[in-house]
Amino acid sequence: MELIADIFLVAGALGAGLYCYILSRRLSRLNDLENGVGGAVAVLSAQVDDLTKSLADAQQVAAASQDNLSDVTGRAEDAARKLELMLASMHDLNERENAQHKPAPAEPIFSRRAVE
Image 1 (tube, rainbow, N blue to C red):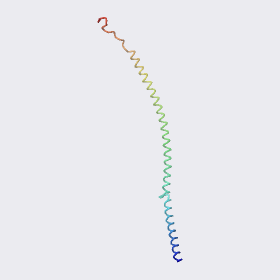
Image 2 (cartoon, helix red, strand yellow):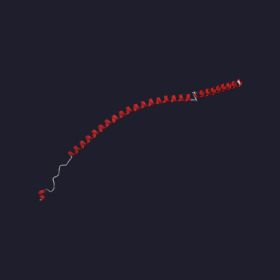
Image 3 (cartoon, one colour):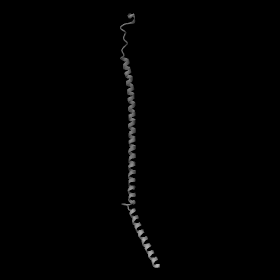
Image 4 (cartoon, rainbow, N blue to C red):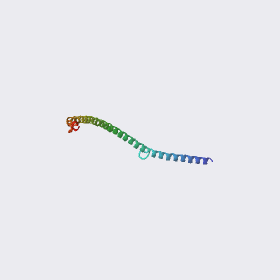
């Protein structure tokens, strides 16, 4: 009876040892830096760093574009004001020319007295 108990005990210990060995190999493959989760984490970390740099560069370019756009908008507003003044002066000039060149009212050919 003790012999059978010892055989089961040795078989259980060998089974537990085999299970631990297989589990150890699986964990080492999982944490492998090239193929496992460790590699995936390393790749994702590198991608996050690249995206952070790209975002910083994009923010700098956007700030420069905003400054450039503000300058161009200011120049366009100045030009629009000048054009408005020029158009207003052209309207005044046109009215003055029309007043100067307006012919005097002609006397009627037939007066009412002659017709009556």
